[in-house]
Length: 161
Image 1 (cartoon, rainbow, N blue to C red):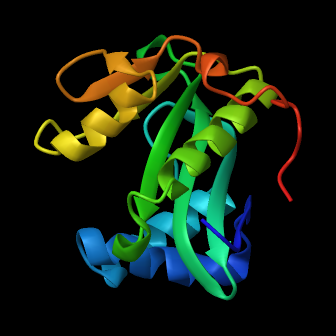
Image 2: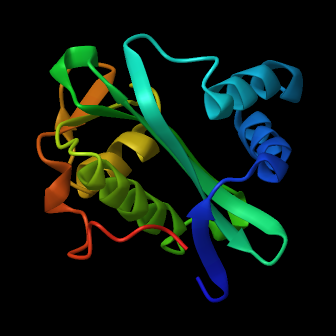
């Protein structure tokens, strides 16, 4: 994780996030309006509220991963992890966990404790990652942190760089 900076996404980052997401599923034409709309608040998942955040992991000019979350009322949760992506050569380096911790910190700062995430039942890697980091099964598609503060760093009210 040497040289990686974690910060809130900027408008100039959004097309890089589109490319990262499209490399996993779909294409850039599919993801561009979704990620840009999510970032500018014109597109929301069901029950999505404001505020919302996208946090990036940047190494120099390269975005190596990102995570997004927002406040919600879905499944009686306070917040929802929307996306978590890390480029293949940065996987298993701790970037995903650090992004998750940064988002947990953001949620705690928003007063959001019960956090949900939709993880495809056919994606055992993602589901195992969330479980390893404290999430429990909610239903076949969703996992939940009953209190995300349990994994948030102690300095949970600090802002991002």
